[in-house]
Image (tube, rainbow, N blue to C red):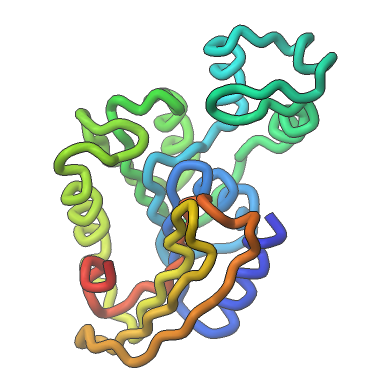
Length: 219
């Protein structure tokens, strides 16, 4: 969470209009870190909005009980290591408040968050939900890249600020991210590089000050 605060401090100090893009666990960490920040727009792809729901599902999938986790404190699983301390943190810190206008793209075959969980979040906040019925949580199936780009571009219409910033397009082996700044005609003005702590790897996190050019020009 502290790493995400550093990123937001840098971004808001350099750009007036800031929007947020995050996927999967990156969305959950953003919901925790940025609950007191209002973004221009937020784009969540396959977001984890209820971590307690996911952890309890992992209990069922891997035949773990709360009593077992309390006794052992940590239990490795094929997905991730279950931690008693983290489970207690999650239960004490549910996502209850989100102030920014948000767009969610959810896969109809997502097995990490149920549709009901996502709909509960959308009803409690200012959220426009789009469902891709044949997509899984990872959105890595045939045609999913076009679905993602179309969803982002459709919801970026009529937003013509002067800069575009893409931050933290992370993969497992990528710890550096590149900022691109564009003018309102889509011409690149400058770019610079920002290094992230190793703990930020593979969070699927993008923070963006969205501007005049269409999103797919920068991908």
